[in-house]
Image (tube, rainbow, N blue to C red):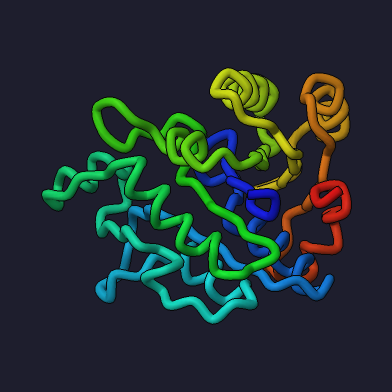
Length: 224
């Protein structure tokens, strides 16, 4: 669907959720009805809630129940397929894609699907989270964690995304920690190599504020 994007990262802990919340804030400010879904999350509290999913729920405009935002919540904060095995559950791309479609068809004008970790996070012995995006045939937003190794991680991620037949809609340079050495040069290099527009550079904000972070993003580049 034209109003839905799958958000992935170059690695874990690169700020996917923070960027999703910033994108939702930008869309909210534009008067769009927004929704987000994190189909599978590993690392939940005693109530079965994941902190990333709760942030998405707070940032979107649509009043979705938690179970709609995060339909598969796994307690251990480990790789999803291992967490599922430990809980005696199975993860299937088709089922996760179906759960996403339920939210996508809910009337939102701007919908984000947040992955877990990077592009090739396993769901089971044969499928990865990439298969969810493939089944949904949605465009992809790549969050690049600006730290040592990010160029290689970004290029490999985009190579995999394009090999899977999907379109990279844009990428975001996010600073999850201290500013890396030669930050500007790294962003310029990525800009030359990545086949999609840079949607923005988001600095480290303490404390993080989605509305403030949204000021560093260009939603127009994404929705054109």
